[in-house]
Length: 506
Image (tube, rainbow, N blue to C red; front, side):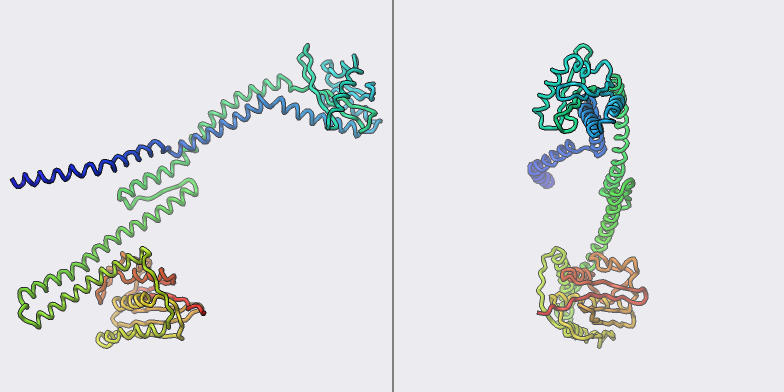
């Protein structure tokens, strides 16, 4: 009956959770549907854009051939006629007649020069029987000249043009008129065909149809190939990203084809390497923190049980056991404090309290705290000062950096236990170095020293620590904007350093 009661009580809780989850599930499904509707593959975007571009070019060509060809031909003819008129106007009277004949034949023009009354002086007809100007001048030139002069007088330009047409022959032409020498003595009339040759236009437009068909098919094939070529490396990177998202950290991003995709694949490979590194180091951190927590907790439990079972009535032993419990509790507290402090530093919530102080006095004060360690454990820890300098920093945070660097040197120094704290004054800043004679750090591991997840498994610490000291130093120095780093040689030792700018003079 009890099991039945338990099952009955569990079911309403499951049912009660479902209504709360339903709106979220619906919103998620709606977002996915919208994405599916709005998303379009890159190759289709490229394909449509190229095809639209090709169609626009073809439409432009057709527009010029069928709509603007006649107008363009007419304006071009007027420009050519104007050049011929300029040549005739600039020629002297002796060579003008020969020039008129030559220009008429070469350009298929009818050129007539008349006086103000319409009497023809010089003429040449390169149009043959189609020339309406020559015909009208011969038949009724006085009326023709009068009408042309009246129209010319209304023009603001130094010439005017008029379209003409013969209904019997479907001939279309242009009449061009201007004064010959800028005076009233003579006029030049030039007639030209106003439409291109029908056979030529027909051939051009037939060719345009074939060109259009060829270009459409060629544009389709070229666009298909280009869109596939552009989208292929991106598709490859996307597939690799899916593998990586599924937990395959060995997936290799390959983007070949053009510069931007190659740069993207390089960035993603670097990001993959860093994420893999962080994932591996996070596992190490969990293992290290678990170990650091398990040891004091085990000690606390063991000594608490000893007090309960053995030393409860013995004040001396009870005091020793209680002290061990207190020490282990302090270790736990220190570990938690370091984790919280590192979290604050990385989140940017830690504010600095900058003050100006003597770097020599600060380092000497730090050295006093290691006197007992030097006397009892035989450590050779010395401070090598330079001239005193005034610096500006958060004095408590700088204390942490110096102590963590020295404690790290103590943990990793060699059997000789030699540690040197050096002050080196440089132009604009003072450099602090903490040097040990330990086993050193390999080149591969050197970039990971300040990482919050890193702990060198090859070296056993002589002094137990939380493993977060250098990470805290890194965040404090970054917060101050100080340069810092580490250099090391295997089997020789390591040097941790940072540089503090001098305080600005007021």
